[in-house]
Length: 134
Image 1 (spheres, rainbow, N blue to C red):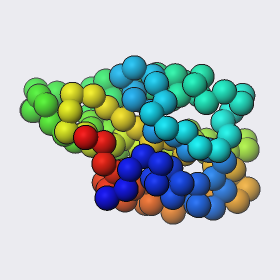
Image 2 (image 1 turned 180 degrees about the vertical axis):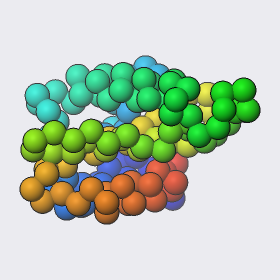
Image 3 (image 1 turned 30 degrees about the vertical axis):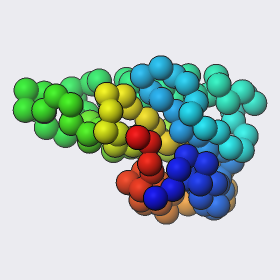
């Protein structure tokens, strides 16, 4: 089972990858970073990713099950992933299941011209499932 560094390096091998990070979406801190980030500041990008992840995870409209049916303390995140696209790139956020009362999200920034969004989504899902956080 890979750790954070191995996971991020694997993400950077995806076509079009510019930068990858593992972000604690409850605190906004980057747990690991590799590559470049929009604006050149990985910590600011991590804070922005955390804010977007919190927003998606806390909205009842995006929940997989009705709010009253979800078990407290479930290891599964409420959202699988979030995709943000702009004119020159894609940002893929993949929620990572964790055995503790916190949340992490893998963030991959890819160039639009040479990135493969479908492949990245599949591979990040695999990586998130294998990632060892605890």
